Image 1: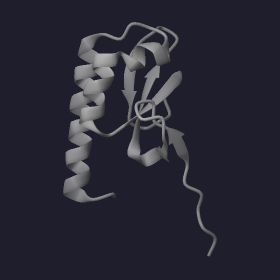
Image 2 (image 1 turned 45 degrees about the vertical axis):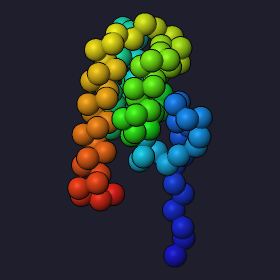
Image 3 (image 1 turned 90 degrees about the vertical axis):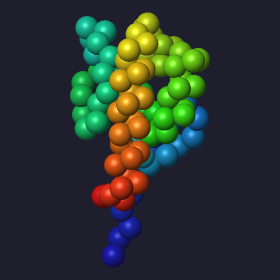
Length: 98
C-alpha cells in the first residue's frame, strides 16, 4: 500500500514545519477582516499557528500576527484565538486525534 503524503505548514510562532492538522489557520480577507479558519479553505491570506495556548499568549505579547498579516489585529481577536486553541487542545486530549 502506498504511503500518503502528509501536508506540512510552517508554524508562525515556532518557525517549524508541522502537519497541517496540528495547526490552525488565521486568515485576512480583502476587507481586512481577520478570522480563525478551522476548515483551512476561506479566501484570503493565511497564517498558521500551533494549537498551544501558551504560544498564543506569547504571540499576543510580541504582536506576531500583526507583522505577518500586515494589519493591526485587535486584542479581542487574540483572546478569541486563545479560547479557540484552548478548546481544541482540550478536545484533542479528551477524544484523541480523530
